[in-house]
Image 1: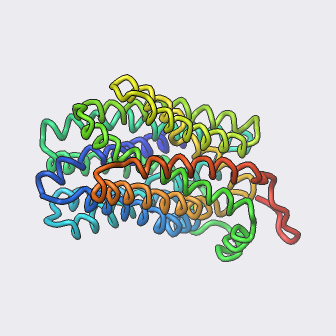
Image 2 (image 1 turned 180 degrees about the vertical axis):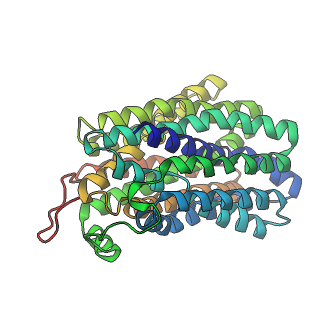
Length: 396
């Protein structure tokens, strides 16, 4: 178990840590290249959409052939995407590299694939806790990598810093060796009780799965809007770039606590109550942040609160999917739920850029994030977490 958690945590630290810092490149790239914020935001919106859509198929591949091959291939794709992001001559190429390529790479190097291994290899009585550990690692990656990325940009420039990250992400390949599973050593796993089509059809007909998926849309909308546009929002109000970098780092630091806490609580209390509390509290935090006088301290307090709630939805969401449907197709079903998250991410990051270019303000998107948080809290409450009853099949 230690090897799986250590290697999985290190992979998520690299993949998610790099991804969380992309907002630091918004102003350097748009100012030097003469692009609008919307063009940058659209590329990252495409990235989230690509990640979500391709993640379903990466999950299928990981469930069928094992995580190692998917992780290694997508690590190479991540490096190509970062290099392409550095050398893109126009917004179209930027959308293809920073958007499509990196999104596809993230689909195979983050939670859906890692959680599939965790779900299959760790006992159910420790599964939610283990997923919390993996999510906390991604949060630590944000705390660790965002300041590193800020330092690289200031010392190497935005292009060379992206190439440096491209080299760093290749460390995922040796780390993936620690996630090879006994059932996938050179051959396909044993005959499955359900086909992919049967598993997906069962999930799509189950109301609680749809409620869980809909709530996850809101999670993506909120966190990606804030993660990408917060540094520029702060600079627009006269703060130095360091304040935005510190804010993102604080989100990562406190998310270590929040992700681990919700993973642990998920073993002892209904996960739907955890999710409803997270979504509602996010909305309250945003309202208080917008109402309070804006200062460096208000930014840091908000970042700490939001950080505690940031990826804390991930362990209870994925653990609920495993609890309802079993682990046989966990990477694929987790990838499908995550696709909804990425649709929300697309809307959050793109609307942020579109609304700013249209009005010079992010206020409307902040308000949408508040309303969506309340809706997500309400739809989480009716979710049924019990294992689904299959007359002809035994739940894994």
